[in-house]
Image 1 (cartoon, rainbow, N blue to C red):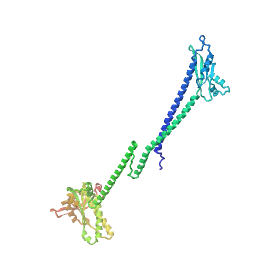
Image 2 (tube, rainbow, N blue to C red):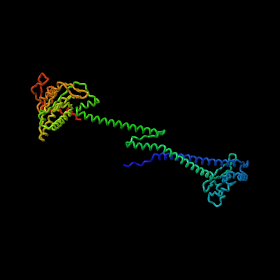
Image 3 (cartoon, helix red, strand yellow):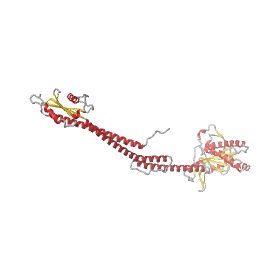
Image 4 (cartoon, rainbow, N blue to C red):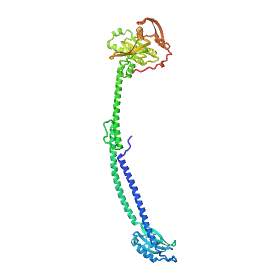
Length: 492
């Protein structure tokens, strides 16, 4: 998609100033010329009317009858005064019947007048004056009538034909003057527009160029010219914007660096502590939670049977690879049900459900974890069998009850764990579990009895307990067990 053509702002300003100057000059010139023409025409008509009234004011009518007019006196008066007004072409006095009784024409104008194209111009001019239809080739003749009255009754008419040529010449001359003035004003207006446009557009063009470079990522650009107008305000705002962008990028860089450090710290931390403990430490800004707390937990131990003798028959690298693969499968299941990986004890895994964060169904989660761990070992052994390797057998013990949870150790080395008799009992159950067997304490069985299938076993005596311990062997989950009741978490 191509950009539409643009016009520089400088040209727009010049065009605007030129348009305003032209409009104002044209308006002033039109008003001036029109007004001058109207005033001159009115003034000339007033002069002619005044002259007609002067001629008509003479009392040259016989006072008795009012019909005898001394036309000769009128003629002599016209011969004397008719040439006093240079624009007068002809003057005539018509009687009541419309007959021309006295007449005088300006010979200088008679030769120029050709109202009808007749060869006898003086006669034509005289006839036209009598008829009141005097015309000239240039259309620059006008007629004025002044009545001669006696006793309120008109008895004759004074008719003056005058030329508009001189007035029109003066107007044409003035128009040329106005045009010259208008062109001068227009030139000055254009010059002023160019100066104004450059004064406005140069800072804007500079600002536009700097903004393009800033958009390209160059934040070193600054405005150094600050006119004392809106452009200066815009320049200061631009500098402030650039500073804001620099600060924004700095904050973003710091935030990104912090997130990278936080992610790296979390990933590193989760290699040594469980996901829940890592999140708790990060939530508390890296300060270990030293204070112990009593929590209701379910503890699971899983131990590989006969691992010591088995490892003696393997190379060290094989032992490490075996444990890493076994632990990887086991840990994924523990995290799936939001369990906390407490620690590795050689080939033994200790998981806690209920600390540092607990759920109402922690016992169910622990049992589900044990069942899936047993299945994972079965698939793991099938894989090892295909490779001609020795299978492993893991025993699992689960117990529920109250334990003390907290960070134990020193400021140099700490470990978040749970301690107490119930934890020890879970460990003792694991020691008594055969390979592939899952043993449940009575406390755990009572919490999940409706959700599992289990067989009671003879009570056993364990170290630290005076009374025999009642235990059950977990067969599996019952068909009615609502698998949707647990929403496992994801390992992060």
